[in-house]
Length: 385
Image 1 (spheres, helix red, strand yellow):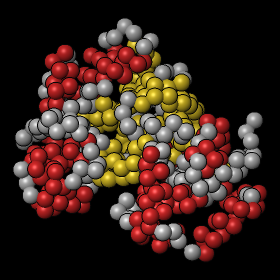
Image 2 (spheres, one colour; image 1 turned 90 degrees about the horizontal axis):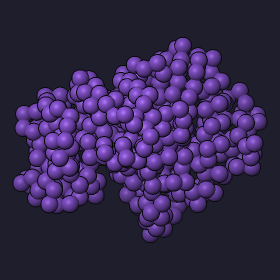
Image 3 (cartoon, helix red, strand yellow; image 1 turned 180 degrees about the horizontal axis):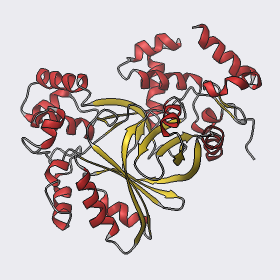
Image 4 (cartoon, helix red, strand yellow; image 1 turned 180 degrees about the vertical axis):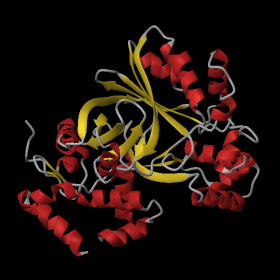
C-alpha cells in the first residue's frame, strides 16, 4: 500500500526544503550561475545560498561532472546484462577497464548490468567473449547496442580506450589499464595516443584529450593547473576548453551522485514495445526518467527512473509505462551498488502524486482536478510566470 500523505516525500527523505529544490533546479539548468545570482532569484543572502549549496554537496545531491555527450557522439555504446555468482568479484575485476562506463549490481532475473563504450562494435564483442562469456561463474550474458539516447547524456569516457583497442583482452591489457588509469594523483600522467582514432572521430589532438581526461578526473581542477601539466598557458587551456564545449565534444553537468546519495533509488526498466519510437519520445519528456536508451536487443528500450522511495518509482513504472498500450513487456531491476560515480540531473521540482501521477506531465492533464490544492497553486503560479 502506497501512502497518500507523501506530498513532501522528497523533502522529508532528503532533508531539504523548497528553496533547496529551487537551487538544485537552477544550478542543474545553468551550472555557471553565481551564488549572488541564485540569491537574487530566491530572495536569500549570498552567504545563505553558499551554506545551502555546501550542505547539498555534502549530501551528494549536487556534484559536478565533465564528460562526453553520448547522445551526439559517434562512440559505440553497449549494454551488457548477466548473472554472476559473485558480482562483487566481477565488479572489482572490470573496475579499471577503460571500456567500462559503469557497472551495477541489481535485483532481478540478472544481477549485473555493465555499460560499455568503444569506437567499434568488434572490440565490445571481444571484451564480452573473453571477459564475461568465457567465465564459468557467469551466465545469461546478453549484449545489446545503443542506437539512440533519449536526451543529452554526459558521462566520463576513459580516452585510454585508444591504447587498448589494438590489444587482445588478456592479463597485459589489465596491467596497462591499472598503469594508465588517471585520477587526481599528480604522479599519474595520462599519455594519449597521438594520431589515434579519436583524433579523427572528434577532430581533436593529444592536448585536447589530456584536457578532457584531467577535467573528467577532477572537475574542480583549474585551467592553470592543467596548463602546468600539459605545458600550455592558462589562456590557451581556456580557449581549448571553450572550443571543445562549442563542438559538444566536452560537456559539463551538475546533478545527484547516485552512487553516494543512498536516499535516492534508481530502477532499471527494460521495455519491449510495439512502437519503440513513440515510447522513447514519451520517456524523453518524462521528468522522472533519468536516462533512456533505445537498443538492438529483444528489449528495445532500457530506461532508468529515480525517486525517493521504491514504492513511488514502482508506481511511476506502473502508471506511466506498464499502462501504455504500446508497451508489451516490462522488467524492472533495482540498482544496489555502482562501480563508479554516476552523476546525473534529477527533476527536483517535479511533483509526483500517488494515484495521480506527475503534476507537470501532460499525461496527467485529464486528472488535474484530483490534484491537491497546494500542487494546483504551485503550478498555477509557475504558469503565470
